[in-house]
Length: 242
Image (cartoon, rainbow, N blue to C red; front, side, top):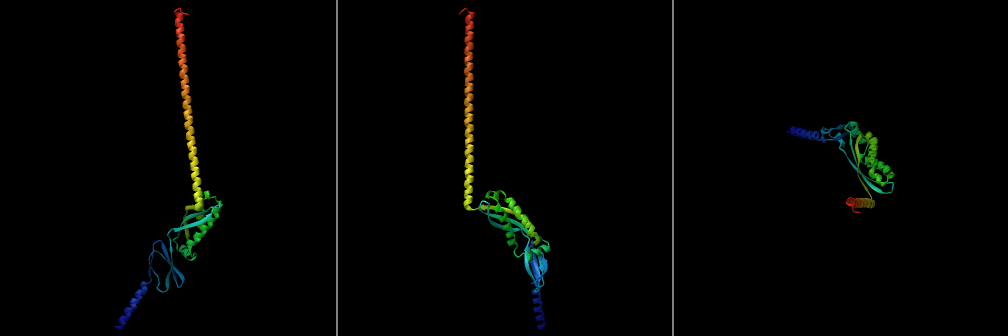
């Protein structure tokens, strides 16, 4: 009886230990398994098993796209500006890429942010504030090129870098809005003056045309009177009246 109880306890203990070795890995994720502190294998999505006590899940590497970085820099004309840059990147699915991403970089997002900061702060100080807005695609391309060159060796692929927002200092923004409003008012005034000029010219041309037509009418009237007088004189002459 005691033997059966001991066997049952041992079997239950063995079952618990065995079940403790089961674990799941989410989709778009890889798990790093270490045995006695040394890399053992990469676990793929789904149900996986590790040797209890000896093995442990050292970390998980996700392949999902992520990261938005805010960078403050100063333009060539000494205007401080905040740029929000979205970096779309992921870890390649090959096991060697997963290992590089886990073991070679302690904090990939922070490292990517550092390279983005360096790139933006090398470009923006060379541009006037207006060019920062017009050349945001150039800034994004430079960020992607820099990250592609560096992060590929750590197992990362950079999909895209986008400059989502550019916000200058509040006072500068208000001044820019004032300048834009003044420019629009000047343009409106020019348009109004041009319209008035067109109206005046049209009225003058209409008046000149009216006078021209009036003169033509008077001339024709006088010609008609002269012709009538001429016909009258001719008729009197025919009748012997001098």
